[in-house]
Length: 336
Image 1 (cartoon, one colour):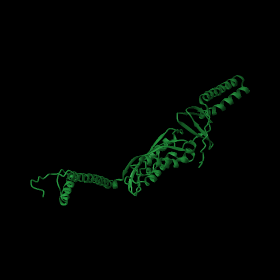
Image 2 (cartoon, rainbow, N blue to C red):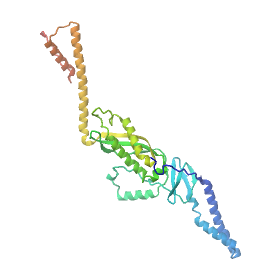
Image 3 (spheres, one colour):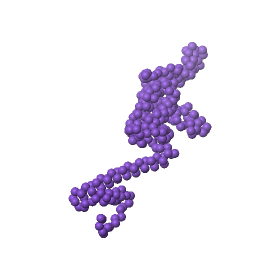
Image 4 (cartoon, rainbow, N blue to C red):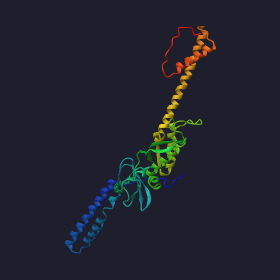
């Protein structure tokens, strides 16, 4: 799908230093014309040349500041999206000192704005802070950064595939690939990215269980971090195509059960570990009992009937599966 402003126009601006020198020379010439016209009028009275020089000098002195508005300075990995009387004319890229049409306007709706999150309204700023932030935004540069940037959203509570509430946080590495789409297709590309990351994270987290998979499901949020990260990156990238933003990496940085169920889930995990450990101990103990009976029968050390074998198996299992060290009892008589 082709979105509006997907074809970015890259401007070829003039050298700013040459235009600065020319503007300074013209300004000096304008002031010199005023002086020369005044001198001619003093010497010759109503001299036509003096009047022309004086009027031309005064008129140019009134507009001599206009060419200086077209001088733009860009640092490495910066860009300016320019409009002329509301129409997009191109994007200025590349480091250096440039001169463009003095009447163009740079557009960047996200200038001075932070990364809005889905939980931003839960802690509103005081009125004084909001005013100072608005004042700061008015004087912020309109340049757009083309560097790779990091978005680290607040942790949010979501439900996994089993309905368990979990807390998840992500970090997203991103950069602007198309400046015109980022500026004109969305209101604020920073806020748009942040909100879409929260939404994509919620959609991906509900597809997989936190840790314990049921019904043969293999992928989990905790055990399949690489696969989940790839799906999360693809989900966010699909949402950010309209804004011309490229997602370089997206990973889960925080994953934990919500506080209301964390203690219960910890007990569940501990019980699972204990059961697995007991199963391993029992399997090993049964193998050792089988080996002991086979060795006794093979070497004809002692001939045990079924009752004595059952007693021996019981004693060995108690010794091998017990939590404490066995306390042996010496029998000085016959076992029969």
